[in-house]
Each structure stands twice: as C-alpha cells, then as structure tokens.
Image (tube, rainbow, N blue to C red):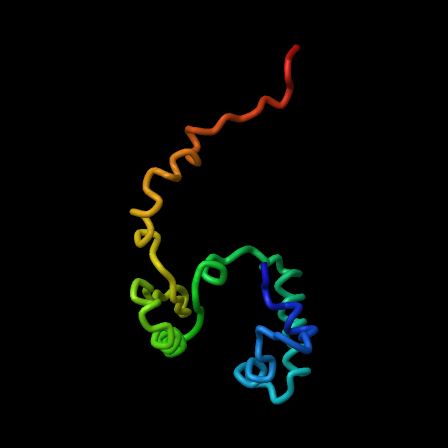
Amino acid sequence: MHGGYREIQAPPKRYAIIDLRELSALCGFSQASQFQGAHREWVTEALRRELGGREDRWSEAVAVGSLAFIEKVKEELGGKAIHRAATEVDGMFTLREECEVYKHVFAGKNDALRLENTHFWQEKVER
C-alpha cells in the first residue's frame, strides 16, 4: 500500500507519483523543503495523538478534496465516472462508486465469506 509519506520525504529521481513542487504550492509553501518539514511535523503529531486510524475515504475513493477538484476529476474521467457519485463528509468531498454498482456481478459469490459459513478452530485440541 502506498500512502505517500516516503515519496514526499524522499522523492524518487524517476517515476514520481506525487508532483512535490505542485503539492507544496497548493499547500501554501514556496519551497518543497518547507512543505516536507511541515509534513513531517503533521505526521509526527498525528502519530503522537494516535490519529493514525484508517479513514475509508482515502483508500476507497478515486479522489478526495474540494467539490471543484472532485468535479474536475470526474470530468477528466469522462465515461469512466458515470457511476461515481460525489459525496460530502465533514466538509470534504470524495468521488467513489457505490457498492450497489457491482452487486449483480458478485451476487451469490460472496456467500462463502459470510460469518455463518466459517469454522473457528478450537484453541486447545483434546486427545
């Protein structure tokens, strides 16, 4: 899984995923090194305060940001974004597909994964 921390702190010389200069400018920093320092502090503080829990919006959405950003991404995706809906949570927008879109594809195939179809091993085997 790629979270971006390493790429921001030690950007690769080739094949970068994150445009560090553009990201720094968007965050209000004139130099990437200033942004990197602030980013380290933000992450350190979040870890110190135990704010490192997983947020679904970052791992299950195509895009996360302002409504204008979401609309731009949706426009650029064109036909690929037909079933994707922009939703707002806590003042932040996400672009994602609802699970219902794939329900007909996987209907019946996930039955084996249901809790009632599981068998738990006993911790202690009697002989």
